[in-house]
Length: 123
Length: 112
Image 1 (cartoon, chains in turn green, brown):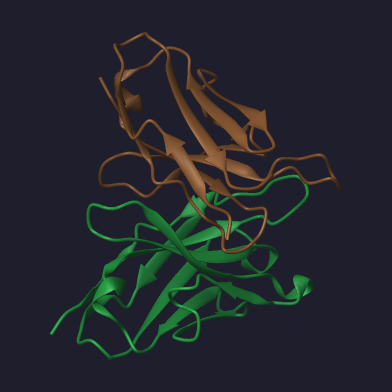
Image 2 (cartoon, chains in turn red, orange; image 1 turned 45 degrees about the vertical axis):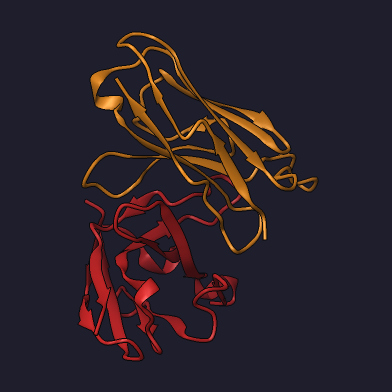
C-alpha cells in the first residue's frame, strides 16, 4: 500500500524556521518526482515546489512566494523528502501536503497524497 | 506564470443530473512534441487531500468512476460528471503541469 506521511508541522513565530518531512512507503520512491502543495485555512490549493528524481537531474522548482526561502531535498536511501522553510511569514500558514508525480510520458499529475501537516505562523 | 481560471466558483446540481466545470488557461497547454494537453483534474472532499481524477486532460485515473470525464484542448477544458452522486459533493480543481510554477485553478464547489 502506498503511504506518504508528513511530519514536522507546528506553531512558529514570523521569521522562524521549520523543517517538514515526508516518509514514503509502498512504492519505489526514487522513481518519482515529489511536490509539496499547501492549503491555507478555507482556501484553495497552492503548489509550493517540486524535486525531480535523480535520473532527471534531481532539480528543483519553486513557486514565486517561497523561492529563496524554502528548499526541497530528498534522501532516496531513506525514502524521505524534506521541505526546509526559512523566514516564515504569517501567509505561510497552511496545511502542507507531500505528493508524488510519476513524471513520465505515460502519466503525469499528483497521484498520491499524504494527509498533510499543519504549519501555523503566528506571534 | 500560467493562470488557471475555473468557472463557475460553485454550482448546485440535483442527484442524477449533469455537472459541468470549466477551466481556462492563460496559454496553451498542448505540447507540440507529443500532442498532449498538460492538464489534470482533482477532487477534494471535505477534510481530505485532493484526489487525482483525470490527467492529460482526458485520461481517467485508475479506479475513477466513468461518470467523470475530461475534455478540451489548448486553453479550454471541461470536467463533466454525467450523473451526480451524493459522494461527488466536493471541490474540484484543475491544474496545469505544462511549465512551473504548476498552477491550480481557484476551485469549483459542487453541491447537491
